[in-house]
Image (cartoon, rainbow over all chains, first blue to last red; front, side, top):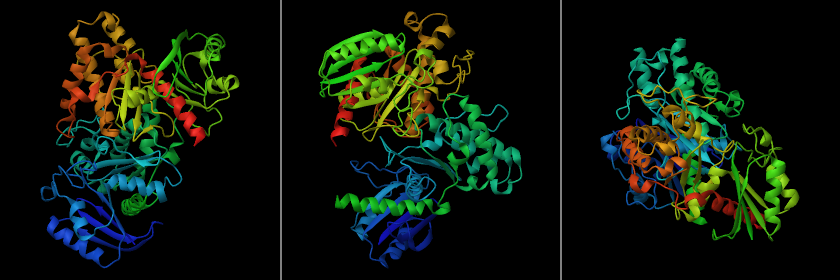
Length: 289
Length: 289
C-alpha cells in the first residue's frame, strides 16, 4: 500500500491508496507544531503495511538530494516548522522510499496523471488561496532546477486603476501580493467568498491572473493550465482570465482554445493528495530501478 | 560526420563536425530567399559524407512532431521564409535524421554540453541583439511544451523615468520592445555599439534584463543563466543586472552567487552552431534507439 501526505500550513491530509490513484483511507490532522502533528501522522500510517510514501509539502522546501538539508521545510513563516527535517523524521518511523516535493508540484503531478491533464506530458497547476503557488510537469518530469519554482511571486503590472499597494512582505505588489486571498480581503474589505456577486473583484483578479498565465505560457508553454484553490470556485474569474489573456498576448503567439486550456482541477480538491500518492509510486519505482 | 545549421535572419552558418563539438569546416551564407540561400547550404553539405543534421532556426518554428507543418518556419516577418518547410526541403537532399529546434534552444544545448553550463542539467540561454530570444535545457531536456517557449516577449515593468514607448509590434513595451537593439537605438538615438561609455544606457538595460531573469528564476529556476548576443559585449550590463536582481528579489528566494550565475557564453559566438551539432547527434541517437 502507498502512503501520501499533503502537508499544508493549516492541515495535513494523510491517505493510503494505490498506484491507480484510489484512496483507501484518509484523515485530516491540524497543523500545529511538529511534535503534535507528526505524532498523529505517524499513528495513522502505523495502522497500515506501507511500501512507499509521498509527501507534497508547503514550502519553501529543500528538494536538492545532494543538499545536507534535503527533505526539510526551510524558511517558512510558520516558525515551529522552520528547518524541520520532515523526510528524515518520517524515515525514522518508516524506513521506506519517500518521495518529497512541493504541494503544488504534487498537485500538478496528480492532474497530469489522473486529472485535467491526463494523457498530456505537461501541465501547470496554479492555486490561488491564502497564497499563490504553482508547479509544473514538463516533458513528463516535475519541473526542478536550482530549486523548485516559486512562480507565485512573479512580477506583474498593476492595473492603472488599482491603488492597493499589495501585501507581499517581500515584494508588496507581486502576483501573490496583489491577487491572493489576503490581498482580495484587504483591498475590498471582505473575504473573497463574500464577494461572489461583485463583478469588479473577479474582473481585476482575472486581469492579474491572465498576466501571470501569459508569462507561464511564454516561458514554459505547458499543454494545460489548471487553476485551483479558493479563487477557482468563482466561475467569473475564469471568464475574466479568458478575456484578458488574448488582449495581453496582442496576437503574438497562437493561443490554444482557452475554454479547454485554462480549466479547473479534474480531481477537484483531491489533486494534491492524489499527486502525493504518485510521488510515493515514483519513489518506489526509482528504488527498484 | 555531423552537419549543423544555425539559421538566422541575416545569415546561415553551416558547419560539419563531430559529437565532441569539434568543427571541421564552416561557411556563412547570407539569408536572402530560400531558393538562393538553400542552394548554397545544400552545396556546402554535399561535399561531405554526413550521417545526421541539426538545425537551430530563427522562428517562430513548428517543432511539434505530430503537426502537419512540423519542420517549418511559421509566422516570421521575413515573408520569403514564412511557412517554409526547411526540414522537409533538407530531407529531400539528405535523407538522414534531422534534429530541429530554435536557434536559442540550440545555443542553450551547446552551452549545457560544452560551454558555461557544462556538467549542469539545466541552463537558460538568453540572447539580446536585434531581438530577445531565450531557450532552456531543464533536467537534461530542451524545454518544450505546447510549443517552444517565446521568453523574449515577457511583460516587464517600465522604469518610472523611461518615457520610451517601446518598439514591439505586438506589445510595444514587452522585454524585446524595451530592451532589444532596436529599442536601444530608438530610445538613445544611436546604436548600442556606439553607446559603450554611456552608463545610463546599460544601467537601464540591466534594470530590464534583471526583471526578466527574476521571472525566469521564479518560473524555471535554471542552474545557470547565460547572456549572449550583441548586448552581452557590454560588461556594464552584467554589473547592472547583478545590482538590480537582488533589489527585485527583495530577499525572497536564496539567490546563487550572481558572478558565477549570470555569465557570458562559454562558447562565445559558437554556442548556436555547436548546439546545432548536438541536435544532429541527438537525432542520430534517437534514430538508433
